[in-house]
Length: 327
Image 1: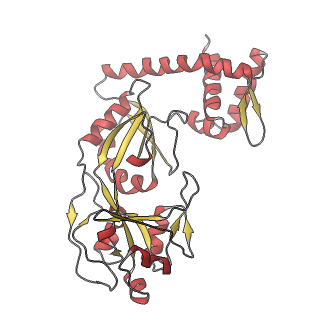
Image 2 (image 1 turned 30 degrees about the vertical axis):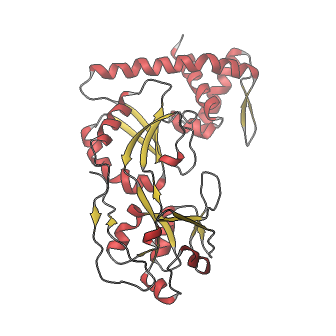
Image 3 (image 1 turned 120 degrees about the vertical axis):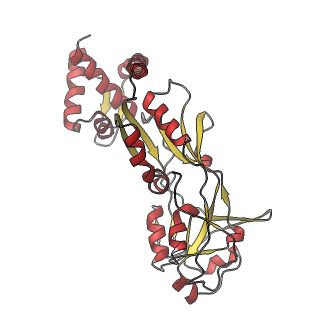
């Protein structure tokens, strides 16, 4: 097979798997117009239409389905063959693509990247921040990083961070100007910063648990966002009450910008995990990344809060997990 023909077939597989020209072009590192011309050239060479495309969608013809069926094993075998050559190098090399929940990318993973690149300078890392239920197989992503509750059962999961709490937080100014909060039900009369989840577009109620008792509160408020960082900033600025993972809000609590509420009711999340498909050989760059992350600490050390800015309405609590990520 000529190199040019194989390049065209590889381009077709990318489009067929993504069902999207722009995403496939980004993966291949070419422009969408170049990719369109490549697919058109392949169809002209074969004398068969492989894709049905409109301005909004891409679908496979019967011939395209058949070609994809034959090409996927070929592409998989080629990638495994190339990756096997890493065993003969001192340092693994290649491209590693990760789909990471936004908060995990900034708080947990981001600070570790300098050490990873220093240890593995030949690995090119691409991180896609995504709070949806990313299909890492369909999106041709090597691995994902999310909380355990979001990971499909057929994935292999590696724990990165022990279980953690989710905290309701507010600024001292907001707390001082509004009624006290001693139970989850008190939140119903407060301005709560709601988050619309990218994974399904839903605005979920807030869950709480204390000594076996559970409470689910449908909160309301004047501000709705789809990003955890915007929730954090809005809470610090006194707009309302936020509901976020403790490692995300810990720095603001430690310096007095935020006060935790209802700590005795704070629910616990199973933890943060790296996960990947069990249906293929693990690429060497991913093996190196997993080994690197496993050497990091899997829990966040406790930090005593500063006594300043203690505000009324904040429930009593013990120690707070710091936002310092595993290192």
